[in-house]
Length: 241
Image 1: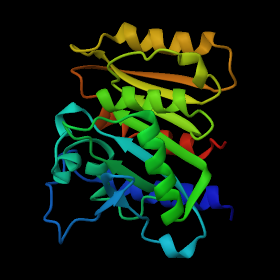
Image 2 (image 1 turned 45 degrees about the vertical axis):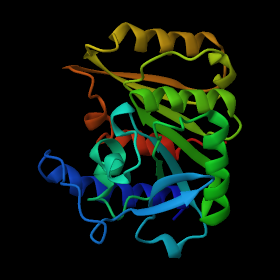
Image 3 (image 1 turned 180 degrees about the vertical axis):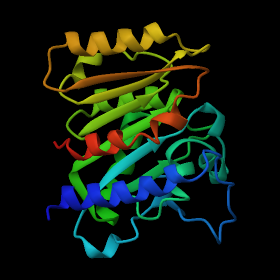
Image 4 (image 1 turned 120 degrees about the vertical axis):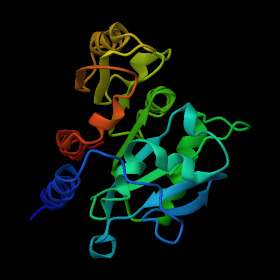
């Protein structure tokens, strides 16, 4: 069985478990009980998820997750409130390394700073450098796009969820596959902005696939549904640099 097929099988099992449970979010656990560990690299603090079978394979795909403005601060438990890190507390078999840094109020993310973190993580853990993905929610989704724009050679795919702004120089990431998620009645960021982002990426004429999913619901929170979408992770696994 190929690594991709094995990962897809693990993924199917892991997500079936969480989807069979209540949609209610798990509570933030104490540090001792937490599934993700607190780490520091390239001057940044982050949560680290390693698959339960981490030692059984030489390399694993990596997801860099970037939180929204509400999780900024100096307490990493804030990062567990929303999005992928929140889900990972119930998904020990999730077949990706996941790194979730915390942006502080004093030090905001930059594309070069995030790239330095990726370098540090790749040197420390068993990362498949050809399968490094970035995703984020709200302002973190915009930061994910900026990373793909400034370092398109480093990112195999990007998945912005409820992004807040369309960055400049978008065509620099024309060869990076992108899957955009948004809500139809987002009161903070209009649905039309997500459609505009998808159209502008397609107009760049690159080789990267552009997908757009609009959930027919109200509110800014598109991430609860997006990160429970099994097909997102299968799609990521098919993307390589």
